[in-house]
Amino acid sequence: MKRFGILLMSVMLTGALAACSQEEDVPTDAELPEILEVELTVPEQANAGDSVELSALVTQGDEKVADASEVSYETWKDGEKENSIHVEATNEKDGTYTAVTTFPDDGLYTVQVHVTAREMHIMPEKQIQIGEVQEHLDDESDHQDSDSDHHEHGQTEGLSIHFMQPEDTKAEVDTELMTHVALEGAPLEDTHVRYEIADPDNEIKWVETEESKPGEYTANYQFPKAGKYNVIIHIKDDALHEHEEHVIEVK
Image (cartoon, rainbow, N blue to C red):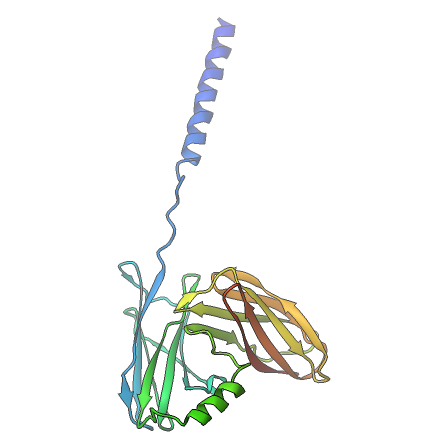
C-alpha cells in the first residue's frame, strides 16, 4: 500500500510538472509590435519669412501614439544640410506633433521629422518650396557643384543621417555618440557605421559602433583633452558609402 501511495504521488508530480512546462511554453509565437507610421504634413509652398506650420501624425496600427519620447523637426536648404535647424515639436496629445518655423530666404528646403517612440525611431521627410526657385541652372555651374560635392553626404537618394549632438562634453569622461540612419524613412539596419575622430592636433582615432536598436548606432568614447574635435560618421554597406561631418566642443 505504501509503495502504491509513492507511485501515485510520483505520477501526480510528473503530471503537474508537465502541465507547468506546457503553460510556460504556451507563448510560442509572441507577436512582434507593429511598426510606427508617421504622416508628415508640410505645405508645398510658402514665402520667405512666413510662419509655416508642420504637423506629424504618429500611429502604431490603429492606435494614435500620444506618448512619443522625442519628436523634433529638422529643416535645411537644398545643398546646405550642414546648416540645418532643429525645432522641438509640441505634443497635441492626440497622436499629432506640431511646430511652427520660418524659412529665411527663397529656395527648395527639406523638412524632416525625427520621431522616437516605443523603442523605435523613424524620420520621414518632405520638401517645401519657398518663394521663387530657379529651375534651370547653368550647365557649367552644375558641373562645378557636382565636383565640389563629390565627397559630401547626400549622394544616396532617400538616405537620412541624424547625429545626436552630445551636450556638455568633458575630457576623459565617457561620452555616448549616437546616430540614427534611415533609408526612405525606415530604419537602416545591419549597416557598418563608425566614427572617424580627429583631435585638435589632427590625430585620428576610429571608433566602431553597435546597433542598439534598428537604425540606431552608438559608441562610447573618451575625448582625451579639451578642444574642438571633428567627428565624421562613415556609413557603409554593399550598396552605399556615405559620410557626414560634425564638430564637438570638449571642455
